[in-house]
Image 1 (tube, rainbow, N blue to C red):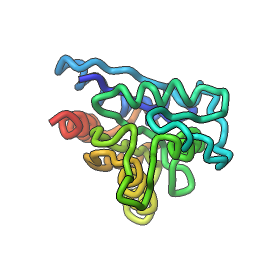
Image 2 (tube, rainbow, N blue to C red):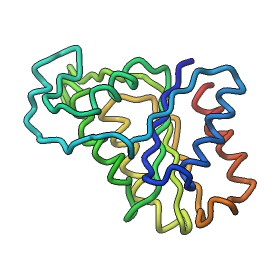
Image 3 (cartoon, rainbow, N blue to C red):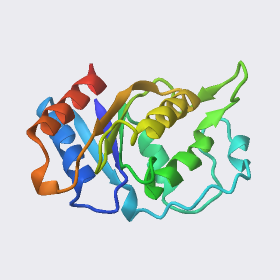
Length: 188
């Protein structure tokens, strides 16, 4: 399988990066091809809500000239996607949020019988690192990712929240096992 991972932390050696690395290593151990995209290193402008993308039925068709079309191309050609973000203000990091907002260009015919997506049926998971507990902290992101998955017609394989990530060098061993489980769930 060709798996694309979207790393949305601005810290390339932080908690989200380490957790995603553990999942990616498991996938590589199982002979999957993994392509990581570090969204923090990308120029992804905010969506302008111009809906010009709706004019091209079988391609993203966004009019903005930045790195997002290349990311969307990788997502479209992937057999599975891991979205990885630190929890910021109970939601996605700005780096991930910009890409999610721009994902409107992947969807056609929303809320009608013609509702389809260029990433339809692609298995996807969400990896979330957070400094505090899961309960009362990650509840909003647990609500919003399934809505995004429904909108883009992804095959939602679940949300994996890694609580109490305050020091990348002190992550619990259980997080490594959970990261490996994320990889298994994504590819089964």
